Each structure stands twice: as C-alpha cells, then as structure tokens.
Image (cartoon, rainbow, N blue to C red; front, side):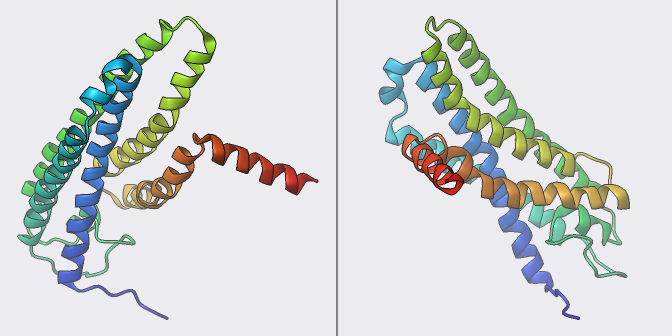
Length: 224
C-alpha cells in the first residue's frame, strides 16, 4: 500500500500556507461585502470611493493580516514537541490534528486559536452583517421589482460563498477536540478547502448573462 508521508518541515510549510490563504479569504470576502454595500447603497459614489487605490489597500491589508496570523499559528506549533504516534488524523497538516500529536502543553496554542480565530470570525462577519443590513434596508426602499431582483442577484452569490466558508470553518476550529469531532472536522475541512473554492467560479460566473445564455443553450440542446 502506498503511504502518504510528509516531513516535519513540509508539514509546517503546509500549515503556514493553509492558514495564510484561509485567513486572506476571510478578509477578501469582507472587502467584497463592502464593495456590494457601496454599489447598492451609494451607487453614485461607487467609482469615486472604490478606486483602484482603495481596492489595492483592501487586498494588501487582507494579505498582511493573513501573514501575521499564519506566522503566529506556525510559530506556536513549532514550539511543541511531538512524540509517540506520528500519524496525522487528517488529510493535511491542520491545527487540531497536529495538537493531538503533541506530548507537551498545548494551552498556548489553544489560546492563540481561540483569540486569533475569534478575531477572524467576529470582525469579518460583523462587518459583513452590518453591510448587508444597510443593503437590505436599501433594497426594500427600491420601488420597482426589477431593481430589487437585480440587487438581490448581486448579493446572493456572495452570501452563499460567505455562509459556506465561515460556517464550515467555525465548525472545525470552535468545537471541542475528540476522535468523533475530528472525523467530523475532516468532512467540514473538505467543504471549505475543496468544495467552496470549486464552487466559487460557478457561483460568481452564473451571474454573468452570457454564461447564463450559454448554459441554457447547452441544457436545451441536450434535451433535444
């Protein structure tokens, strides 16, 4: 049987890049919520406020926060001593399964996960909910139904991506660790590391009219 073997250095590198991209995704989704808020609530100021400069600031800000978070988690993990079993109960080097292999105190690691994780959940989700609170308020003030449906279609794809990503990530990192929850965590991890990224192109592209027309033509041609 083929064994999946990874070295300590490769595992820590994988952990770092995973935390970097996962955290940056949190804040990119938050920036997208602000973008939709400006597009729907302040359409006349959209081109002025959402300038290329501000978009770059939001993008690089997301990456700087992600870099800091990834360094904090990886540095804390590298301070641990691993002994006894060296089989990771996961399909990649994630924080919960690695903590189960430690034979030294993991209190600091759990504290970092709780504090940093709470910040990365509370700040983005509160910003997103606030943005969509104003968006929904603005949508209900639109008098014609076509404008409402257009506004809802603008937000629906982003809401779906946010719900899948934050929902599955929260279930992984904020549940008590046990063998049962670890197995559930692997399922949720597959959701936000594989399913959500694969769905994003489909979720966002289906808003494009040309793709919708091509999709309908493909379906209709197969039914003939």
